Amino acid sequence: MTLDQKPLLDVTDLRIELVTGRGIVRAVDGVSFTVHEGETVTLIGESGSGKSTTAMGVLRLLPEGLAVLSGSARIAGEDVIADPDAARRARGRTVSLIPQDPMTALSPVHTIGRQLGDALRLRHPGIGRAEIRDRGTALMERVRISDPARRWKAYPQEFSGGMLQRVLIAIALAAEPRLLVADEPTSALDATVQAEVLDLLMALQETDGVGLLMITHDLGVARLVSDRIHVMRDGHFVESGEAEQIVDSPTEDYTRSLLAAVPRLGAFVSPCGD
Image 1 (tube, rainbow, N blue to C red):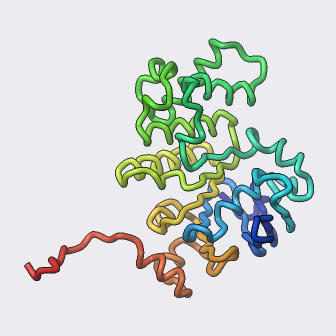
Image 2 (cartoon, rainbow, N blue to C red):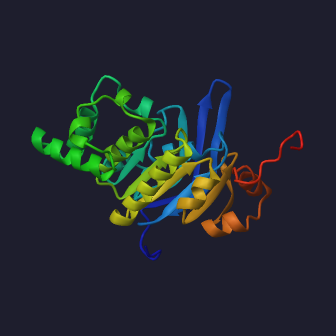
Image 3 (cartoon, helix red, strand yellow):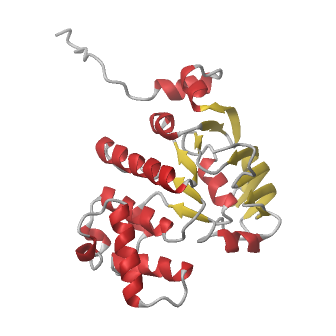
C-alpha cells in the first residue's frame, strides 16, 4: 500500500443529523479520514459514539428522510453524499458491508446457498445455476467453511455463530469489492472464534489487497488488525493516529480509559485473601 495513491474512501468533514421524536440529534460532527488499498482503518468508541452511524452514512444506508448528511465521502473518487446514485453504484461492486449480526442479516427461511447465490447474481447477472454453485462453494471454502457442498443446502440456524460470520464474509466477497466495511464483525463471538475471524479477514486482505474500514468498541481487536485508529466520542474524533501510537502512547484520557477496559491476563487475587 502506498499512500500517494488515491484513497478508496476519502471522507471530509462528514456531518450526520438524525431526526428523532425528541428533535434533531447531531450523531456525527465533522469527521475526516481515508482508507487506502491494502490498509485497515478502525473507528473505535463506546456504544453511541457515532462510529456505526458514520459507516452507514458513508454507505448511504441510513433511512431517507430521517438522516441529513453534509460534507463529502468519496468512494473510488465518487462523492456519495452529493450523489446518492453513486452509493448505489458502489454498493455490491466497489464496496461491501459485513454486518454485525448474522442472525438478523441472513434469512432463516432460505438456504445459505440461496443467499450466497443471490449475491453472486447481483455481481454476475446471467450466470447459470451450476456456475453459481461452483463459485459459491469456492467462496465458502475460501472463508474456511468445511464441506461447502453439503453446507450449501443448509439453513443459517444449522451453523454456529463463527460459521455464520464466515458466511457473511463470503457474501461480501461475492461482490469482488475493493473496500470492505466491517461493522462489529466479532462482537458476538467468543475469544477463540473472534481470533479466527480476524485472522481470516487479515489473510483475505493480504491476498486481495482490499481496504478495510473496521468498526469496533474493542481496542483489543483494533490493536490486532489496524494500521490507523480513530477514537470516536460523541460524534467526533478525540484522537487519531497510527495504531502503535494510539495503543502505546495515547494522549487523551478517553483513549486511556478504553485501553484500561481491555481485559488482561494476570494473577487472580482472592477477595478473601487466599
